[in-house]
Image (cartoon, rainbow, N blue to C red; front, side, top):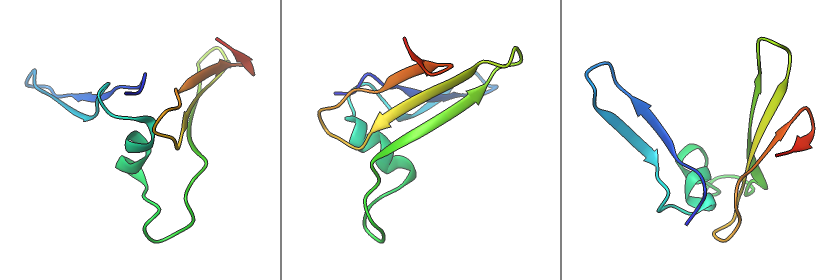
Length: 77
């Protein structure tokens, strides 16, 4: 079980959870990319730069037992 949850709220009040807390991090990465046709990934990285210029990085390991991590301007939180 991962510490990651991704959901898409809809304008009608419903929502879709392609990644739930019951999924492992590896399963979360598989939603976007599988290793069926290419070398397996090491991790999935999502980067966001805020309006104030801070860089936020979410790193999801390609692992059934690992946990996702967050860094802001290079500092772990």
